[in-house]
Each structure stands twice: as C-alpha cells, then as structure tokens.
Amino acid sequence: MAKITIAEFHELSAQRLPFSDLLGLELQSIDETGIWMRARYNDNFLRPGGTVAGPVMMGLADAAVYALVLSRIGPVELAVTTSLNINFLRKPRAGDVLARATPLKFGKRLVVADVVLYSAGDNDNVDTDNPVAHATATYSIPPA
Amino acid sequence: MAKITIAEFHELSAQRLPFSDLLGLELQSIDETGIWMRARYNDNFLRPGGTVAGPVMMGLADAAVYALVLSRIGPVELAVTTSLNINFLRKPRAGDVLARATPLKFGKRLVVADVVLYSAGDNDNVDTDNPVAHATATYSIPPA
Amino acid sequence: MAKITIAEFHELSAQRLPFSDLLGLELQSIDETGIWMRARYNDNFLRPGGTVAGPVMMGLADAAVYALVLSRIGPVELAVTTSLNINFLRKPRAGDVLARATPLKFGKRLVVADVVLYSAGDNDNVDTDNPVAHATATYSIPPA
Amino acid sequence: MAKITIAEFHELSAQRLPFSDLLGLELQSIDETGIWMRARYNDNFLRPGGTVAGPVMMGLADAAVYALVLSRIGPVELAVTTSLNINFLRKPRAGDVLARATPLKFGKRLVVADVVLYSAGDNDNVDTDNPVAHATATYSIPPA
Image 1: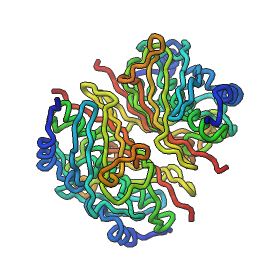
Image 2: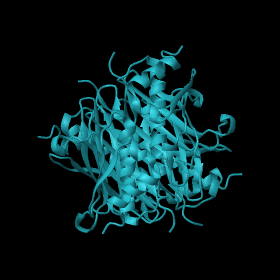
Image 3: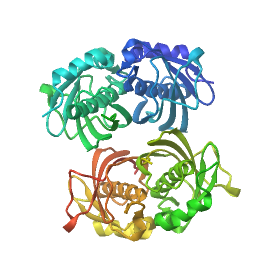
Image 4: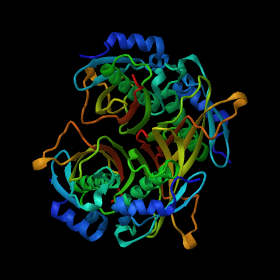
C-alpha cells in the first residue's frame, strides 16, 4: 500500500512546493509499479514553435520521481534530487503532459528512476510508441 | 560581437517564453567566452529545507544555454534543447542563483555547452569553488 | 526485416572494431522491438569487489545501440555515438553481462535508445526486476 | 599531499584492474586541482573513420575519476562509479588521448567530477579549445 495518498501529496505540494502549482502538477495514480503525474496546461507552458517549454517537462519529470519516492517511503520532504538526465524526443503539443515514473533501483539511500513523458491526446489517450521525452533521475534519501 | 543584445533577448523572452518570467530570468552579460544569467529569487522558488527547487535550477541552466546560442547565431527562436544532464552539488541558499554558460562545441547543427550554477552571495559575490549545480546541455539548431 | 544479419554484424566488428573483441561482444538476437547483446566474460572484466569493471558495461551498452542502429539502417559504419548516460544500479556478478537495447526515437539523423543491462544468471536467466545498469545513448547518422 | 602515488596507483591497477591495461592507461600527474591521465594508443582503439572507439574514451574518463578519488582518500579500492554522462564533441585522431579530471564536489560519501578529454598533439600539446569529449561522473565512497 502506498505510504502517501494522492490527497496527502497534493497537500504537501500546496504548502511546501509552490513551484508545483506553476507547473499545474497533479498526481494521477499510484500503483504497484509506479506513478502517473500530469502537468495541466496553462499559457505559461508555451515556447516558440507552439510547443511546451523544456523546463516544464524537466519539472514534471523531477516531481514525478519525488511522488514515486514518497509513495514508497512516506512524506520524507528532504528527499532530494542528486542528478537528472533528460532527452527531448519529439515536439509535444501545446497541452497537458503526462509522466510515468518507475523505479530502476530503490535502495535505502539512493533511488534511481525512469520517467517517460507523453503528450496527453484526446480523451487522455497516450501514444506509448511516441514519448515526447525520457528522463532518468537519482534521489538521495536522508537517514531515518 | 554578440548577435543579440541583452535587451533583445529580454524582449524575445517576454513575448515568447512566458516561463522565463516565472523563473525571474535576467541575462546579465555576454562576453567572448560565454554568458551569465540570473534567476532572481521569488517565493515560488522555495522547497523543503529552505532551499531552491530543482526545476528552477534546471530552467535556469536551460535558458542560459539558449541565451548563449542566440548570442552567437542571432534570434533563432527554434533552436531547441535535445538533452540536458544536471548534477545537484550543494544546497543553494534561498536567494538568487547565477549561471555561467560556455560552449564545449559550437557546431552548425549541434551546440554542447557547460553550465555552472552558483548561489549569489553578498554583493553578488560568487564562490567559484562551491557551485550548487553543474549541467551540460545540447541544443539543436535548425538549418538556416 | 533486419538490415544486417547477426553474422554480418560480427564480421564488421571483427574487421573494423577490434575493441569489441576485448569485450567479448556477441549479438544474440534482433527482433522487431530491439536487440540483445552479450559481453562474454573473460578475466579482463574483473575489478575489486569481484565484479565487472564499469568500462565493460559502458562498452557493451554503446555497442548494443550500434547494433540496434545498424539492424535498422544497414551497415552504415560511420554512425557515431554523440552522448551516453549510464547509471550503475547493482553489483554485477563476475560473469556474462546481457544488454537489451530498444529505440526511444528513431529519426533520420538522430537515434535515442534505451539500454538495460543484466547479469546473465544460470541457464542465461535474466532477473528483469534487478538490472545491473541502465543507459541511454544518442547516435548520429550521417546523411545518406 | 596526494594520498596515493603514481607508482602505487599503477601497481593497484596492474594487480586489480586488468582492463586498464587494455586501455593503455597511465596516470601522468597529480596536482592540487586534479589529475591528468593518458590512454596510450594501440591498434585496439581504432573504429571506422580512422578514429578512437567510444568505449576507450569512456574507460579513460572513468579511470581518471577513480585516480582523482584515490589521490585524495588513498587506496580505497571499493570506491565505485554510480553514474557517468559523456558527450562526444569531436573526432579524436588515432593516437593517445589525455584526460583532465577535477572535482565539482568532494563529499564524504559522493564525489562528482568533471573530465575533459583531448587528443594528444605533437609533443603532447593539448588544444584546450577543442576537447574531443566531456564527461561528468559520480563516485560512491564506502564508509571508512
């Protein structure tokens, strides 16, 4: 069972991570293999080319891993990103972006996670063959 | 001589990159070896631990390379990030963050740049021995 | 259908990539979604801790993407790696290492691929829940 | 003062890291800000295009950081790479490759280092404006 609920994550974000609001972040679901998170589109996302700015996708990827970590260890606010690598693959459309985060390794001190980002299609369909970006991120977990 | 002025970059950002405003981005200087950019602190930067959220630093690093690229090729809006790798090194203080971007390779189609991020100290002093993050980013330049 | 056979890849490697021999590289299979490659263990792989040296895994990951690329475009020798990011996740055992490479994006000029590395277990079983490393690599394809 | 001498590093490599011999690795110098390491050319380095294979450069970058770490903490064999990111910038010539490794952060548990790779020119001149590759690597140091 998840160590944090979606509501609890949103409350923590609202109180302690103001930036997540600018990114329109919404934790969508927590399951046994990972989490889904959405960046709900607003006009601040736009960049030339009619597409979504890179920092929005980087912020979404980072937050998705934070939610993944907290879903397994509870509300340990001081878990921090130590590194992030992202490849931008395709031009996202000017709309919501969805992220799927899954762990590659979940150690006591370090978590390495894989994140795939998709443009949300009609009815929130996701074209899994055509992700818009792919990231890996490492989080450091403070000693209990 | 730079192919874009600081004022022109700010005008382009204001009109076309709304996200840069949320990050408080200010291009500080353009010189022969690179550029300096600042993320001027606002309360949206905060994350637990009394420090600056990772997405702020990623957005600053990405924008610093964008400014570096445009300073050398002019206002080519459609230059896009293809990849970014960042290591978070030290906890930045809750304040302005400064970025120094320099090219590792400036090709016709691909630019690879090095970015070092610092907490702005008193009087904007920068402790060059203790960067808060280091990034490398690749930009793709569209055919002329 | 693959644009290069396993035998052709091995012939190209033997003649043109002497380093692949030091790594004991063997292309195992090519299918519609990717390729499998093996680094067959020899005593040069060892590092302190009774495990496999990092450069062996990096070389395997890189070669796996090269084989993936050639399986789809044919024997274009001058396809070159432009970047590679690797996370070492678990200590591999002193034995063969297997790599699964799949494309994240297969463009005309750039290919981005995902590579997962596993220790080969008894009977070549692979513990898919416990990869030893994960890499992403970008290849540049020369104009035809 | 360095916690390991060049001779001690070579002895450790010869006995415990057979792969370093295939790469022709030679620790050149240790100073207060970093180390220089060479990969002495042999015909196994070649790849199509008359240049040096990527795995040679990745192995050199990794070993350079290992030497940097040991120069500051002594012969702690079990220090291990946790991640490495490399950008290939220019085609190296078929000859020796030199690496300069310097720390970005030297913590008790984690070291993040910057590595710049150059083709060795005539008389070992290094064209510092035109590196052939750039890497960042993270090492994990076991508790004492």
